Amino acid sequence: YLRREKQESFELIMRRFMNADLKGDYLLYLVVHGGMYYEPVKRYVDVFGRNQVKILFYEEFFSDIQNNFKKLLEFLNVNYEQPQNLSSIFNESKKPKNKIAKLILSVDDFIWKLGLKPVFPFLPDRKKLENKFLESVDKSQISEKQKQELINFYYDDVSKLRTLLQRNVPWKKIGRAHV
Image (cartoon, rainbow, N blue to C red):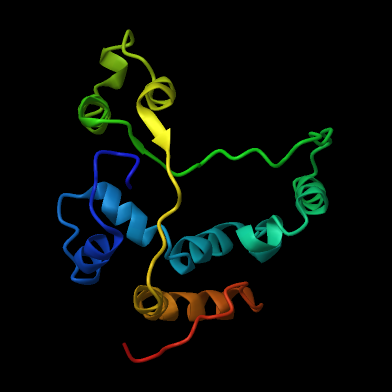
């Protein structure tokens, strides 16, 4: 979310989505609802069948990346030589370098959202713009109170996911508490 044009604090972002103030902010909607896994996983299971869907949790996958990648390829029935290095970081925390960078990325976002990118093929692609106008930053930390609010927010979705998959999820602290 910060990678795009937004410079709001995490606490302010949380307040907005906890109060369902997502109107007109599709990116924030994705940030919030991208963490709701039950419905999309259920649709896959319903359409393809449980034995045709493999659910991999990030935390589990990266605990033994070589072995889990091999199991994934076997599940997909793909014969492919496994790469030597699977530890590259592709979604590093970044923000615009300055106000001009923020403006350029905002304009690019606006053009993309309107579906006009194909009309202007001479414009640089998003990756090139990000490489030029974004800088790496340390990941923000959130307070324990904010963490508990998020746990409460996602609790029902995680419970339904656990029941659907008939297995534990790797998120140990999912449980309700009064905030």
